[in-house]
Each structure stands twice: as structure tokens, then as C-alpha cells.
Image (tube, rainbow, N blue to C red; front, top):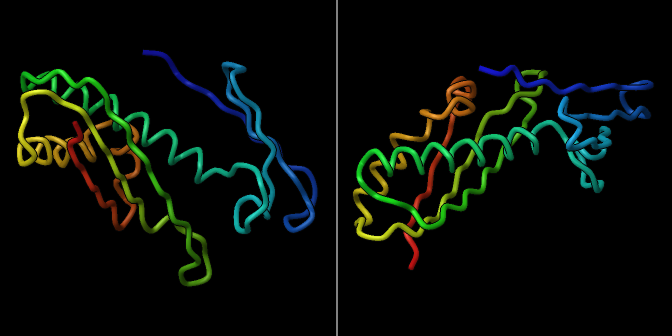
Length: 143
């Protein structure tokens, strides 16, 4: 299996410095700073990238789990919200909220939610984040 890489470079002191995160594949390179991470400045941050990774991983894993159960999804859209908080003098990711919406012919709401819950920590990114104290999931069918 492939090994994926990314690089982060930080220049300067924490409050006045700036950094860049880049994918090893060359598909993206983003600036980041204290303001983009802990404030409201435009730009990305590590937590947003974790949210994107988890949303993508969860959507793919849910498609696979639905397929194993005999359902073929037409569309799955997942949003992940990652919260970083200061706890006991250090910053921690203490909550992740997943919200997924799917169009899946032939499945009822209860079965869909059951499969979605089973998938929550089943994808590799979710598994890697299993030490986050709270990961909630809202799953709903559309169409």
C-alpha cells in the first residue's frame, strides 16, 4: 500500500510567523498562521485538513459498507467539523461532528443509520482519530 506524505514549514515566532502546508503529490499548497488556526483570518489550518480527510474517508467507507449490505448509494455528502479547545493548558481536538446525507435507493432510515454508525470509526482516518473524546454522527437519507 502507498505511503502518503505532506510537508509543513513554519517561519518565525508563533504569533507573528507564518507557515505553508503542502501535499507530497503537489496537488495543494496552503499558507497558515495563528490567525487562520485560532482566529477568523481567511486561510486553512491543520484541523480543517483533518476535517476534509475524515469527511472524504467516511464517505468512501460508508459507500463500501452500504455496498457490502446490498445497497448502492447514488450520492453521499459528509461534512466534518473539528473543534480545537484549550484544555488544562494545552490545545486538544476534543470533538468532531460528522454530518452525512445520502441518497440510497431501497434502504430505510433505521438500516441506513445503523450502517453509518458502524462506519464512524471504521474508516482509516476515523480509526486514527479514535482518541478524540467525542465523535458524533448525524446521518440522514434524502430523496
